[in-house]
Amino acid sequence: MLTTLTDHSQATDPEPFAGPDHPIRQITRIMAFGGTWTHDNKTNMGRLFDGMAAEWSERHVDPAKRAPVEDALERGDVPLNGDWLELGSGTGAGARVLSDRVGSLVCCDLSMGMLSYAPGDLAPRAQADASELPFVDDAVDGILMINMILFPVEVDRVLRPGGTIVWVNTLGDQTPIHLPAADVLGALPGEWSGVTARAGTGFWLAAHRGPSRPSVTSGR
Image (cartoon, rainbow, N blue to C red):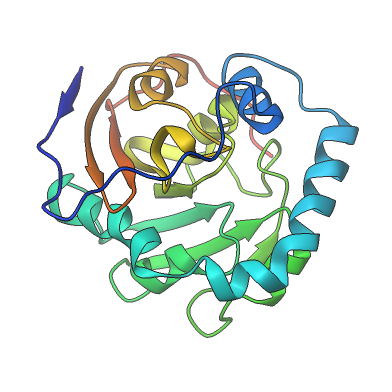
């Protein structure tokens, strides 16, 4: 079940940027619905974001990017007193919002270049491929993903029963790494409910998982 709330009072439409034929948009959809993440995918994506890290650190930590995260925490019924993981943490936009609100936070990104610009005093940082995370089963209570490729099986594995995912696309349907809220819920294994709304130039989804997962996965 997905509930759509009214737009945040300062929500605005994004400028045209990335349409449905954008190659990263296509990869995002393929990975969410059972595609294979290859070594070339990993290498190429890492190099892409390494190359953008310096510019990203100056241009992409701003109020418009924070707005959907802030709104999700305020209106998405998101529990904050547990252990949290941010995937695709980049240069620290999510950490700047979450670090002093949650019980604990670890930030992961494939790109070491991005991590090198993230503030290390806010949360531990780890270079990791989100298709094969270096965490045991049921490791965290919440996962934040801002403009991040969704790997549903791995997210399901590390998230505890009853856990929460906050999914953000900061440019809405113009975000290169984009999935609509309903598709995120549809891609995740098991029973989920969600709340979504627009804020800033993007949207957020707070997805809440049921108290049990559909099958047992092996630990790492």
